[in-house]
Length: 264
Image 1 (cartoon, one colour):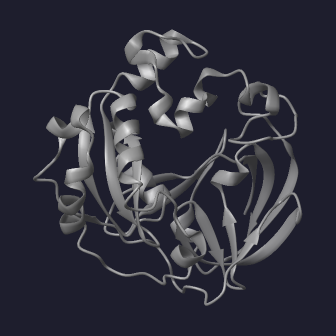
Image 2 (tube, rainbow, N blue to C red):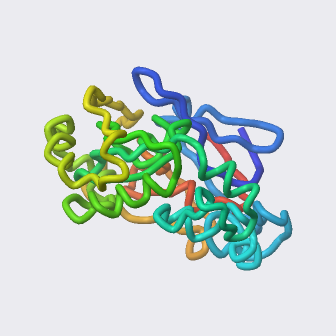
Image 3 (spheres, rainbow, N blue to C red):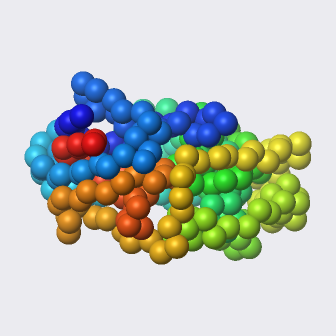
């Protein structure tokens, strides 16, 4: 079976085991069905997801010009505490920013390699947790805009990490923790503006990923350095494909790469 298209992050569906789908313009693959099969990935060319030109991808699936001009690539995306739409102040496009920022957001704790704090739109739960490879997660606060979520994350990350150790996550060197207890311990550090939004009754969600075998050691596959790769798919976790030789391919980091896939 041969497929060709531009990579975007895999779509997911929360079931007893997470289901993964790789979507191309005219086709899609249920990646769970490819476990145990040999897959080849051949990098063909760049395709910016912003301007749709064959321009080198700089970050987030777009070229440098789109990264520095598109409203959805503003600094407030990675640093929500910089959000200003609630003040009526524009960064790049106020209409877009109001739509994106002035909606319910959640600050959460997730355990993928260690406990980390993060921010996402409420509509992106549990997708955000799945994308991070979290085997357990819990909501801490639900606030009405991105700014309040941002300042809450800034406050809490003084006491827990805001990063994931991807190697530890992919080798399954993990601990099960009581996130409800940790959430309660962190309650005291929530900023005054967000204290009323604390979710005292939220429960921990457990997530199972489709992995046949975890590697003992992990290596990162980058198509810029290795434009052709072939291996047997052993698992999927987060946005990573895990292969039999310990190679891990981060699909999301390769958004905007046009590839040819072959399944044997």
